[in-house]
Image (cartoon, rainbow, N blue to C red):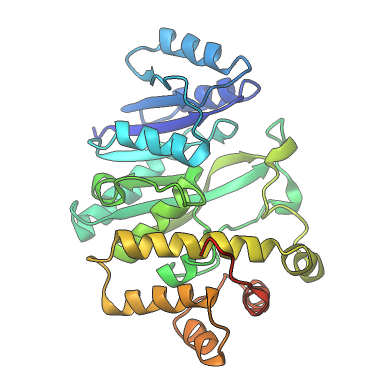
Amino acid sequence: MHKVTVLLATYNGAEFVGEQIESILKQTYTNWQLLIRDDGSSDETALILARYQALFPESIAVIDNYGRRLGSALNFNCLLQHAKQEDYLMFCDQDDYWIPSKIEFTLRQMLVLEKKHGKSYPLLVHTGFRYVDANLRTIYSKKNFSALKLADLKLSHLLVQNPVYGCTTMINRTLVKLVDAVPTVAESHDYWIAMVASAFGKISYLSEKTVLYRQHGNNISGSFKDSTFLNRFKRIVIEKKMLRDLTRKILMAKEFSYTYAERLDNQQKLLLDNFIELAKTKSLLLFYRNAKSGVRKQTLGQTSLLYISMLLFKNPKAI
């Protein structure tokens, strides 16, 4: 059996982390290991993790954080560095709940892809999820929510939006080696990894809902909020959320262009250059080039708001 390594990053997750670990213990696929790093929690999280490690020492390991607080993306990156030699990695959030067949289902698709493309090809598989409340009850207004609305996810799409949720994702060792490390400018570990996979490998989406994605307190997903055009316009344009997001995305695109300069083909380089240039220039030709190369979000409404924000974009000194 192929071994699957699950990476769990925690921080002040005492309320739900035990339930998440229990859902992993109930997986139908049994050849897994759980690698955990706590980011300096001030609640009971570390005690809960220690208890599970003592009960299941052959399957669960908690790595030392050496007293360092890294934040979510770099917490996952630290786990990634510890698991670089493993064949298959999955990412796990502390407050969700995995359905019993999640590992088995995702691995099956990964093996199909490796048979088709070869194990030396960078591969990412991600699945659907179901919105639930704090008590794991389905939120029916979002019951049929789909994270991905595009048939073929490309780098041009990922420059402005990431529909790949880390908690639904499995990657193979070839992609792990290509990613190497998540940079500090990355919005999140899953965003950066998805960009790498889209540029140099293959992303496969399965609509099967393998995760109960818990909504509670400050964890309310942006996709879950009222998504009418007017509310999006207020949040994205008037409140300038998109402008802040664009700044981060352009910085990330610059880092991506620098990191993978020798691997990018000419078309990819031009795509990145034209997107980065938006921080400096507002010419109609540049807008046309970005639109023609497929820089867009998943829906027409989202894409319209994106380009309105691009027109309003002001060049921060950091870029």
